[in-house]
Image (cartoon, rainbow, N blue to C red):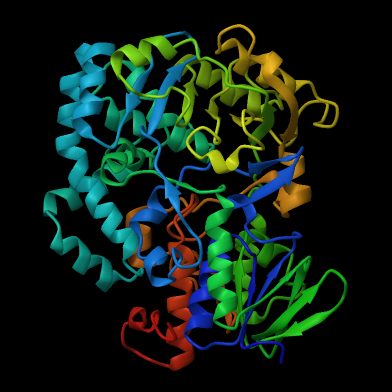
Length: 530
């Protein structure tokens, strides 16, 4: 037998799961299809520079116990903290506003930019902060009805009632109770439903309303040297505990014997045996592609996954090397409003109007990109000089949303990425484009080819809090499957996408409990082997 447990997928959740298992004394082998670990949390070398595969702001993971429990600081993880959480800007040239970790500083800026919305933001915070605190506590709690109930009882019951009520509503319905200016609503839409691929009027998106409040509770940070410094540190923790990593190992099937997992099969035909397999990847691929003949216990579940629509990726990223720093058109305004704030030192979110967002949804369904797409702009080398290719040079990060995998005419040879780069330059003072010495585009087809993301799509868990509480879709909310020995983790499982890490920690918790046969809370086992 190659290992006691095989973890498939070297993104941050797979690595975190593997590290906890190895530190508990479990012989663990991690398989990654790409040449290196990290997945969408990684930082890669190209064009003589270092680029983050996705936006580099880490927030929720910093509020979890993972960094301390895995001793990641001792393994090289360091964070720099941008002065502001984000700068919210708008394609129509409306006044930008800034969200800081400090509530009063945020309100002071709002009082100048949108004075008629400042009191509304105060009312929002009174209602949202208890919900955000409870949501964070629940994310920290290994999922079980008893555990969630105990967590909820420790908090103000009004926070629980509001969490449940907001989770049934749409985001625009919830925030519309507080704000009557779309410029206070669209930023939350951008980092919530838009990132999830949903319209903000969709019922069930309302809990995204805690996004602003969460930024006041947890300060965002950037791993020094890039987002991949997090996954690099977890890999060190894993290997120091005796774990093994094998990259360039793409799985295309499960070995199932007598209804139980017996290992995995690689695309090369090689089989690797293990009594437990954790699939830290897209759940649909596990049930649709990896089971030629599902055991009787899993046939109904496999049929359900096969009937689900196949989603497509809709996010792209342009990475560039800059010979110097551009000047945003709003730089002087923000410096006057927030003395000392570097306008390039944090993520800048460029929001469309509600009408433009509706158009973007319609065009995406036709395989086209909106004329003014939602964009996230960043120059990571400003807050973190370790990201600079060399003194005086910088790296540009530009994400564009609603860029469909099935682009009309296809992505090879498309002029879209260059158009986004020109849109970025138009938001800067003249001369910004001349600073770009080299650039590359990561489009949905590239994410599929480089990171094994089917049709460029990364899954995201989207069930309601009640579904999680009651353990509906247990393969996603409790991590076990009907196939004995097969567990799921990753962005498609609770608590979902983003750099959080609790899906990895939770599934390790579950596996350790099952391996030990313990009926007690296995969370106490997570420190074993430290």
